[in-house]
Image (cartoon, rainbow, N blue to C red; front, top):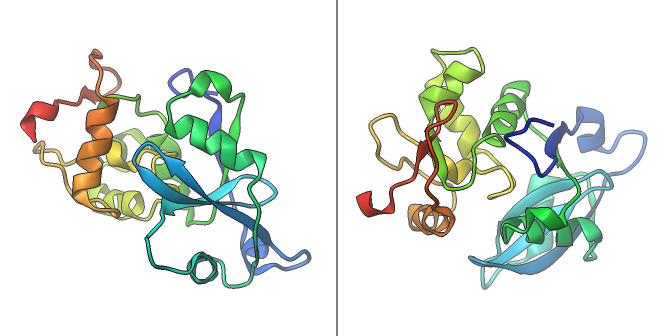
Length: 203
C-alpha cells in the first residue's frame, strides 16, 4: 500500500459479470449506521464495501440499493465490514487492519477513485491536480464527473477536492456537508504531492 494511504484501504473493481450476477448472484448486505456526520446507509458484497451514503429520514433503503444494483439480492445484515467502515469514518484508522472497497465503475472512474485515497486527512487537492497525477492533464472536467460519481462517501474522500481557483466546487451530498466534513478533518500539514492544507476560515 502507498504510504500516503496507511490504513490499507483499496479499490477492487466490480466486474460486469459480478454486477449482473452472472454465474453467482450478487448478494449485498446493508445496515443503517451512525457516523460523526449523521446516519448512513452502508452496503457490502462478500468482497468489500460497495455503497455508503447519507440515510434520509423517509426512504426505502432496499429500493435505493436496487437502483444501484438491480440484479443483486438485498438483505439487511450488519457485518464486520460495516463496523470497519464506521471506524474509518471516525478516523480510528489504527483499529482497521484493511478494508476493500468493491466498486462498480468505468476504468477511468476507478483510476480517479484510487487517486483520491492518497489525499491526507485535513488537506485538499484540485480536479486539475488529479488529472495531472493520473497522466491526463486535459481531463479535469471528466475527473470532476468521476469524483461526483463516487459511491462511497468519505471512504473515498471526494469531499477533499476543490476547484483550481480555491472555490469549493460541488458535492453530491450537499456543499454544506462538504464544508462540515473538511472542518472536522482540518489539521496543519505541509504541502505534499500537490495537496494543500484546508483553510476553514476561507468559507
